[in-house]
Image (cartoon, rainbow, N blue to C red; front, side):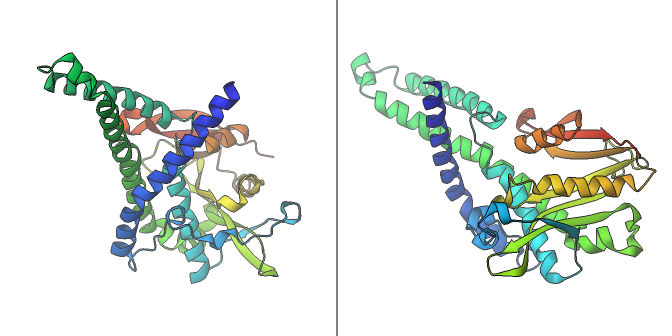
Length: 314
């Protein structure tokens, strides 16, 4: 019984997510038109680009290789695309039965229904009960219409705008040229690096496809972390076709080895949003503990979560 109810909820969640994507599509088109070519910005979660789905079909044969980012325009474009899509996933894939967005949506739904019914009752209060009862279906329809519009604005368009602003800011700073920022010897790269995970492509056994990214640097000045002793993990993203296969784990292992080679670092730290529920579970599985939460959107419904892990030097 419970499983059937949960499956029904998941089914409707998929429908809602599909509608949200259709709602976002014109905004994504306008954004890409406005910022292209000055800023590279493509939402694969919107345009359904299958470029990263041409991986080896057999998971058992897939081998992941971790290496440093190459200094090429083609690879820079790929990691920028993966970065943007990873951010977009926090907007379009957060409507599931257990997420805080769903709980906040239920509260909004109840509030909208109550306000709508009360408003219509006040407007039609002078009418007889029989006449009001004839408007029962209209009341419900209008209530759900208002709720869905409110939901699209507050829980889809607003987070989309926030993520877009963050993505554009990042593409104008470190992600504008990630190799220059993280790997260039003239940029203090002894405490920075950018790694990518690659695997084979169906187009040929020798062809590689970048399926994941991770960067590490000294903690940013002005953050809740200590730049003198903390190594900050950044730009973690894995393409959808390669998730659930240990790619993020291999990337993290590479970063941990890199950090342990720098004796001045005492902790590995990172920040992510509460929308990334699976990522938070993964980091805690790796030994990270939650340091603090900072409300960033919707009255604290979405928070910036700061995580830390002490380094055991060998």
